[in-house]
Each structure stands twice: as C-alpha cells, then as structure tokens.
Length: 290
Image (cartoon, rainbow, N blue to C red):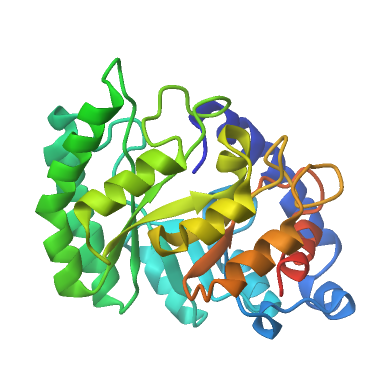
C-alpha cells in the first residue's frame, strides 16, 4: 500500500510519465517485441492501481491483458468493478478501511468492521476472493495487546468471510521508511495473529519490498511460512521503483521460490515507475514469469 505523502508525489510523477509513454508508443507493438506474457508462468500476476494513476483504469486493464495479468489490486466496489469485468479481469485485492486506523485499536473496530463487511459482500458477489485489512498504528500500544485486539476484531468478521469464501488479508508493511508506528511490521507478529485466528479465510499479504526493509531473508521466510501468506506485492528496494538493476532484490529467484511452494493466489506488482511505466511493467512481468 502507498504511504500518504510519498505515494502522492510519486504517483503524480508516474502519471506524467505514463501519459507520455502511452502517447508516444502504443503498448501492443512494444509488448509483442518484448515477448512478455504472465500466462507462460506459474504465478497469477496482477498490478496495483494506485501506482499507475497516469493511466485510466481502461488503459491499465488493456495493458494488463496484453501482458497476461489476471487483474488489478486495491480497488473499491463500484464502477471500477464494472470496468474490470468489461476487460475480463478480476479485482485481485479489494480495498476496505484506513491503513493507520486499523484493527489494533478498539475505538476503530466499528468503522473497520463495517468497511470489511461491505467489501467482503461486494467481492463475494463477483466471485472474487480477497479483501485487505490493516493492523493500523500502535500509538504507544504494546505488541501483545495489539495482537489481542486484532484477533478480537477478526473473530467478529472472519465468519462472514468464511460464509462467502473470501479471504481477509492483513498487509505486512515497513515501519522504518514508509509507515512509522505501523503495528504489523514483521512476519513473526503476523504469523502469530494468523495462528491465533486459526481460519483459512485470514492470511497475510506479504509485501516483498516492505519485508526486505524490515527483515530480509525473504526466500527462507517465504518457504517457512508459506501457509500464512495469501498474497504478494512487489517493488524494488531502495526506492520502491522498477524491478531493475538499480535495486538490491533478486526477483526471479524470489518468484521461483513462491511458485515452488505451490502458491495459487495473486502476485501483484506495486512499484512506482520512475521511467516508462509500460516498459517497467513489461519488464517486471517478464522477470517474474517463472
């Protein structure tokens, strides 16, 4: 997910680049030349909407279809769903409540649960599978209390998710660079919450960029806790930009490790392109087609 200030500035820059790229070179010819198609691999790849705001959703869906993507992440119910369906795509992760005001703080429970209920029902109505949730910020709360509070909230909403065959996914985010004070900022805490809730309809969204900043040791973690992870996000580190040679992550072996676990969920690209966004997404898809 985006950090509020950082993502707005970056998205504006990405938007200008996207508009120029689309005007200068139609995607179809470029993608044919690149030969990238996610359908050739084992991962169900998708893309996060907020990173490509310079494109309309129609344009992003057209590009995504040409690349073999199955859908778009982080949309809310409404007209966006209709646009996706027009392109034969799915919402691979439906939005819900605020990132900072999350489940670890009881005073936000009513608002969070109402938002989750709405998103679960709307997602289920389309036959789709994922709804995002957040721990929220700690605001001085200790980790154990926060975990207990999250579990209490989830125990109220998970039965609805089970009824509708929807999975609630809590995102792991870094508290070092982008999201100071975020509670669910490490795998161990998140896995303890998954174990406590004890439902196949609650899992973790493992954001590779965020967990590289907080923990590293990504492939070992993915293999060890594969059953707790229901969704993945990508981005280059440092900078949260393209998956290219300017960043420290080796995405092909990471993608191979995820595919080797038998993962059948969605693997969504969530990087902010600094350069040509069409080229950046094309290269990311090709790199992660394993």
